[in-house]
Amino acid sequence: MTLDLDDISIELDLTPNRGDCLGILGLAREVGVLARKNVTEPKPVMVDTTIKDKLPITITAKDGCPRYLGRVIKNINLNSSSPLWMQEKLRRSGLRVLIQSLM
Image (cartoon, rainbow, N blue to C red; front, side, top):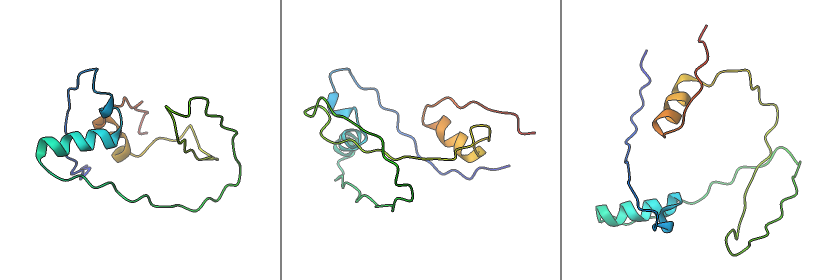
């Protein structure tokens, strides 16, 4: 079985004083500087909501968190296995994946 994943991984070793690299955009800017490439921020793709439920969110530190986004997701089957390609993408991203029996 082949997964046909053509991902490219970049491993960064940052010092704790690099708070600007705690997010994806900061990391992209840093890699752009190192590679001498311009970094363009992708345009967000809006997805229509199908669930009207909302959860109350209160931001108490607006300076540290000026914006919070979330989405309600329902009917998740926690007993089903993630596809092998997704497990591998997660593993390559540094996340541990609980491997369930394929039988």
